[in-house]
Length: 254
Image (cartoon, rainbow, N blue to C red; front, side, top):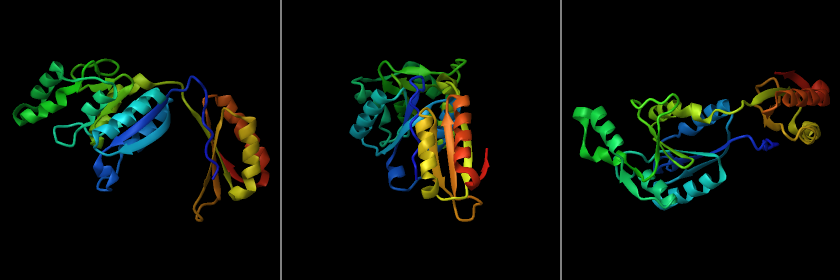
């Protein structure tokens, strides 16, 4: 399978996704947050460059956070945020940047007010965040909304999918960039037969990502070829070039 070429435009913001939790690595829970975030970030024009899964080990979380923060424009973590013993993401993020952990008064008030009769002192662990962290309320800002804790370019999100989505949706407009444009060509011939044509298109259009994906035997085609990029005209030309090179092997294009 021919892997997609990287989109190398300097204006394309990049992202890393860090999934935290022993339950993911043990197979007890299937992660739903990374697939969701992949789709949403693509719609926003952000290119995800890495997904990493680490256990509930503060040192490992800190190392991953520090590495991703230095490499990508945005980093999104999922999991390890809550009142229990294995919720260690906040102190790990603080350690990644050499920060202390402090109790943030506005978060304490929000926890007490929102939980009311269900409040337990242990819940206040969720108000302990890295000193100097930002509280992102989204655009437009709504201080009634539970904020996302952000440290530098790292956005700390919970692991529960429904809450993860709600919190990301509140800040999603912070990350909007230019859109990606996509086209596809479907081939009745296998990858070996069309590899030379793909190579030629990759060389001809270096700013277009070309991906080749074999399909199930029940499909009406053997390979789906995708073409993606920020320049709509270049993507269109790349598709036409591939269409012409493949000739009768094309089942359809879209």
